[in-house]
Length: 224
Image (cartoon, rainbow, N blue to C red; front, side, top):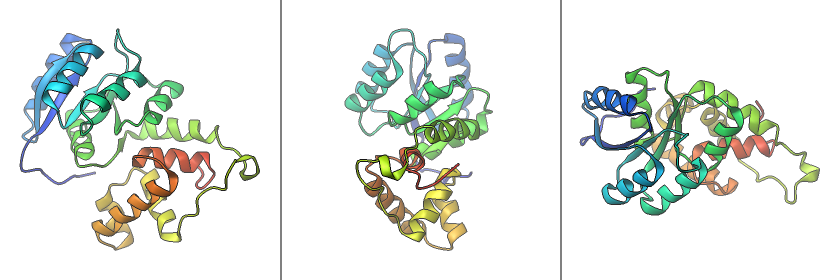
């Protein structure tokens, strides 16, 4: 997936408790013209302090830090720098932990086995306001969400009704397509796709694309 180049570099706060990984990744990412690692942090408290002071565009966050539980850290990052996007960068493939992180409202989930070009693209994608999920992570969380599915008869309220076009957009969102790719597939403008996405989020009462897909699976609106 290719995202449009920004006029200014994406300001990134890199959070990981392994110093060698932080230093190596900083060198690699700073070689990319669209990325600027503005600071590093080794734990959750340091991440909160630097996020509050620097207001980065993206927080590149290891899921397992020594001092804070991931869900609590994501919530507090939203409090101190609400415009910052949170991109988890982790080697964890435990379905429950991944699912919990995504359900907490992160903007993307990358894996440490990715090459620099793919990671750069993931950062660019979340910085542009879209979600990013590595394909391995997508499979994990969708199957985990499916296990939470309840028959309509057991739901307190009926699932929201989406239009046929909104369902088409939602299914393409589930395949991790970008707005541009969805627009090309459906032969509509990106602005039209953004409007559909906004309406889908509103109907499902969620804050981002990833949560929308999870909620749709849980409600049985789409299947995996």
